Image 1 (cartoon, rainbow, N blue to C red):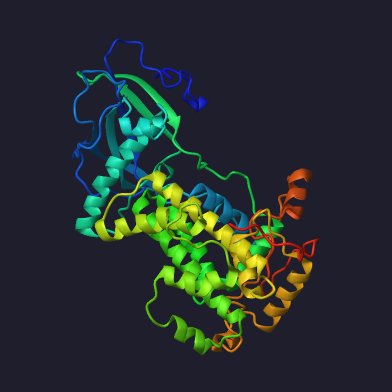
Image 2: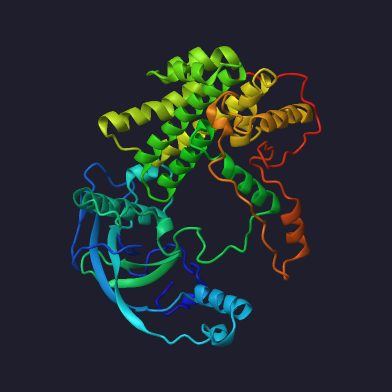
Amino acid sequence: MSASGPISERTFTEGFIDPDEPAPWWLLNFYLELPFYFPYLDGAKFNTYLHREKWAESAAANLPEPPFVLLAAIQTSVPAPIEPSPAMAITMRNLLHDRAKGDLRTAFDVIPVETGMQIASIVEAITPKVLLQSEVDAGLPHHPTTYLNRCLNALNVWIRSFAFLTLDTSVRTVQAENLPQFMAFFHQRPYDGEIIRFDFFRAHDNPIRSRNAFATRSLAEKTRSVASSVDDTHGVFKSKEWFHTAVRLSTVEGRHDLAIVAINTAFELLVFGLARVLLADEGRSSQDIEVEFGGRMGVGTLCHRYIEPRIGGRWDTGDQSCPIGDVTATIVEVRNKVAHQGLPVSPGQVSAGLTSFINFAAFMVRRTAASRWRYPRACMDLINTYQHPPDVTVGARFNKTAQAIVKATPKYWLPPDDPRQSSMPHVVVQGTTGDLPGTISSEKRTHWETTNEFFMHWVVRPGGSAQQDAADGRGGSPPQD
């Protein structure tokens, strides 16, 4: 898009083509508005040369070596309105109209505008519009987002170096999702620095404002009921929280190394938590279980001693064709290289780790579902946390049994004699689903009232609800994984 084009279109009009001028190659200038103040002086530079990288084989012959990203801090003093945000002002005005009296009712109708000043930190990032061989090998497209992520990787080196020295907690690594949704960039001639063309693009899918989406009635109820089970005694639930942490670390902060550590933590919490519940299903006392797991124990030992004999399946950590072997190769071994050698982790490695964890959780659900009458607590704990794979049916009869267990021992993942059974849950939530706007369409209203999300569609929990499966599910066993 040329500088004279209509900016309001918010789309490419020319794609990602080069300017209509002869040049052997082009520089791209990105301007990254940080979501925090970066305490560097205006004009400070942090030029990053990528000595381990090479230009793609198809690149022009006269490109400078090594590849680079040139970074410069731009500190801009901008007016900052000393007033509520527009959304907050509307909310306060409506609340006061409804619930206040006298002059207070109109206090937010007219807000005098006062302004202060604040410093906005913007980083200029310049890199050649030429793919690296590693980007080609990874299948990345010749698209602004590829070059933006290259610049963000360099910027995060700067941020991490500064944070290491200062331990400033307000400074943190950033990903595209932390930046404005639509971003400007320039094409710059490489030798004289002249800016030739202005473009902008959509850097990510996070919306500027609401997507006009809402939690369905089912999801709102499940969220309320889950709150009482998010407990520090509940290892299997904790594993899913760590899994979510891993996804956030990778996609939002770009810390793929920390994401792998988080996935490994999720895996260990899952197997150790399940082993405890399996013993509770066998009638072991709380004291016995604490003795069993009071000392140091490796994950492999735990799986072969406590899980494999009880629920079956293949548990060869050296065979990547089975779930535990895939987890070992893509999560445990990668985590060990991070923790013991400080080696970097690629986005592809994180993706492989997340996938293997999901497959492993599904494998565990299948195996416990096959033994659900002997290990009902373990089965419902995994299903409550990680949902049904499509090929698993437990049936209404089992659902009724599970409800009875919860009624007798609300903290069903603990043995009946555990003293924590008599304590109140961490929290007990009373909630409502909220009110649909009067303008909502009948289709959306029906969706809100009737939809059961694909996750946690079978929930057994105190104060919760349970979807009855039509089939009893007693015939046959899930396939071996």
